[in-house]
Length: 356
Image (cartoon, rainbow, N blue to C red; front, side, top):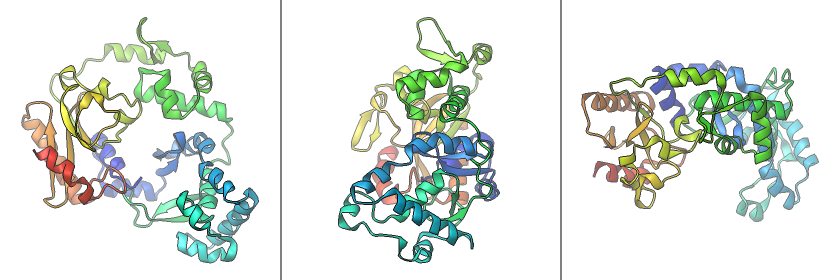
């Protein structure tokens, strides 16, 4: 949340600029929603209801903490009704909602502050959002910031959704294995946030096959021929994407995206240099070439340029790809944060290390 990932991913794949992406967001063709594992994703309209459904089981974490502080479900439900009444007059930010709800918003004091739950308002907002009753709107219409207003969502996308939770997880699995197969059951289980038994039940109706007899990677039968007949392009196809890009996030298997000679390559990490093959998550944005990570990059707002570290000998096409993304970030985005707290100051050591 608050990062440039959605813009970088869409630009890399279809060339969409920020204005087009923001228009799609404003027109509800896409939306930022709590979804798999309770994490926030940018979702296409077709899957709004599915995203909300598979995220619901993970939406009560703060409420568990709040109950230990004396907050009841009835109290949060009552506040939720006041929120809905207030939003009937139009979108409001949290300060406006707090004022509109009169005395129904309660501070949870120092103990709540220590546990990350300062008032009861976020509890009501989270519950209403997971139920599809309200939606969160970026104040300036952009996906790379974290200031929001809230609005009623009418019609509620879940109102016509008839799948049970188990059926919804099967639909999530169907999409997952279409996006990133061949993948393992464990990789899907992590992405969906399910236990082993629930993950097995979710994929059972899909009749997935082992990619190879000795492998634990699964693929849908209808995709096997397409994958086996695919031949990678002979020439490089460079793309600069975010550190949270789907190609990295869905399987969380960095080794599978690194060439053998790059596994022991030393790269800048959060606490100094580390071996690339030992990482679980990327420390910086990625440069891809035909499914392989061939470099890392960061945007330097101070010089309006990209600092990058190639794993291969740079050719003209790679330099042009860097230059093109540099122009996109400079002219359309202004910065390329990985997440909301990824400030230019906190990024400075990584930028210096990449340049070195």
